[in-house]
Image (cartoon, rainbow, N blue to C red; front, side, top):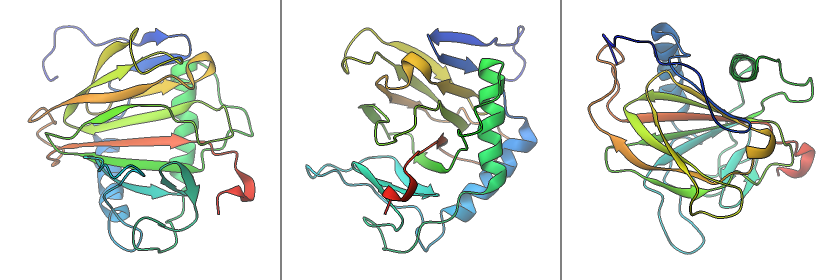
Length: 221
């Protein structure tokens, strides 16, 4: 938050899971927010996600590159308006590579070109249950970028949704990367902290931009 005495430092939460606070500048946050607002417009815009069991996710979502739905990928918004998914911008894919370099101190492998983005919008009462990002065939690290309100991000283990896990406060501009032995760890958002977004950003709520490497070839159809 503004006016803190000490800068928050990079923290290794688990092997391969790294939190880099304040990675996005204020200007980059505004640019990403503007882009998210464009991506959220129809066609293939922001939609409510329903699970096969009849549940409804409280965070709404828009996808780029490939469309995620429980539990797979498609080239059209199969659980929305059916329109072709918006393309993954090259600059956003490059940002994923920069994020990996910032977290791990190395550039991603050439084959690890980020080709999928999931943008989740959280209101103050939105939650995300513990889950794994397991529909991809690539083991490349997952990149998570936060905008707007802070949240409690729960990062767990690879065996179950229960303990052990660790709660991390993610603020606007923070980067979280998880790969290697933590790539399939369960994680979720049990709480959003309303009213904590930077005043100059102009966002009420929280946006999370998750970048992934699908490794799917022609399978995402």
